[in-house]
Image (cartoon, rainbow, N blue to C red; front, side, top):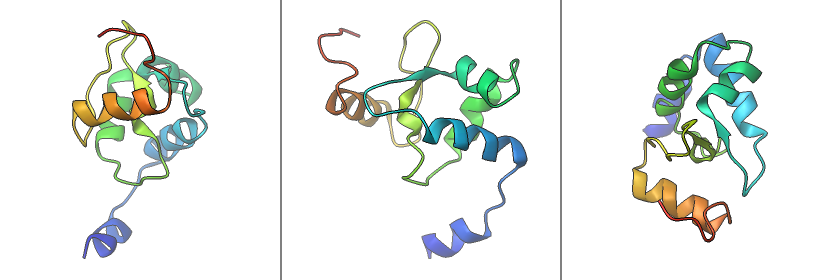
Length: 98
């Protein structure tokens, strides 16, 4: 049933561009919402990037690798604890305190 829902879900051009940028973030590295917005061609759309990522449930797109400009982790549609755990597992948060 979830698969059918995802197939019916429409994705805007903006979302597609954001997802393409995020798919290229290597494991253990992050970009900020602002950096993703700029790379997607929408330099003033950092908040919209967050909204687009919140709507994504495709595991191929590593949304957890996008953080706030101030270094805060930001939100994640699977929960903040999950985001932190994934970033720790990938080595980004090694030795960093939140």
